[in-house]
Image 1 (cartoon, one colour):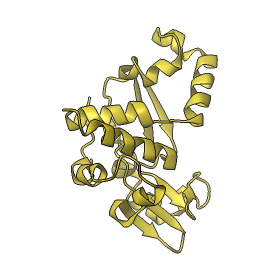
Image 2 (tube, rainbow, N blue to C red; image 1 turned 45 degrees about the vertical axis):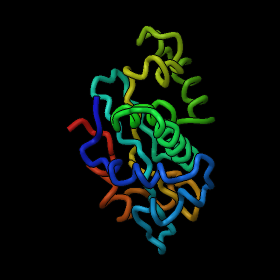
Image 3 (tube, rainbow, N blue to C red; image 1 turned 30 degrees about the horizontal axis):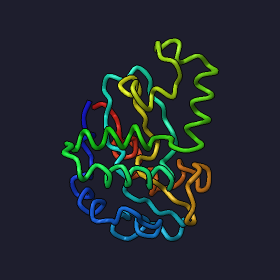
Image 4 (cartoon, helix red, strand yellow; image 1 turned 90 degrees about the vertical axis):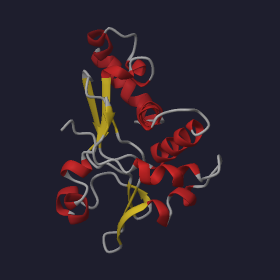
Amino acid sequence: MGIANFSKFTHYKDLINALPAVYTDEMIKSEQFLLEREEKKKLEIYYAPFEYLNERAKVVIVGITPGLHQMKKSYSTVINARSLLHSDEEILHEVKKNSSFEGTMRKNLVKMLDELGLHTYLNISSAQDLFNDASHLVHTTSVLAYPVFYNGKNYSGTTPNILKTELLKKKYNGRLCCRNRYH
């Protein structure tokens, strides 16, 4: 377990902690958290602290990219941890547990994984446990490491095509994109 070798958390941690406890979408989708923009393709990529590695995971769940909801939850987790004495690794682990696939997406994912019987193979009561007490069994990640927005909305992975868009291929594909590689 640890922190991804390409982590930007040390740079962004103080910026996130400088946010008020209650913040707006505009505060986090701002220039200070913007990693890259391609106006022609209407794409923006922002920082979010999804850089925890679970090298001992039994299951890996891969999404396309974190969305605004997950980004907000990750920032809130960091802000809530600022008053506690946590190491960066502990904070990033909490971010993963609290924010990965958070919201309706997680509810649907848990339902699907439970229907498949994954929990019985892992000897847990439900796939929901993977985001709580059994988080040591799962590693969550995304094809695109950081939140990507197309035309101001969550990027779905289709328009523009990931494989035909240089911005998404060059920097955020491979080592940086698949942020939680084990090597």
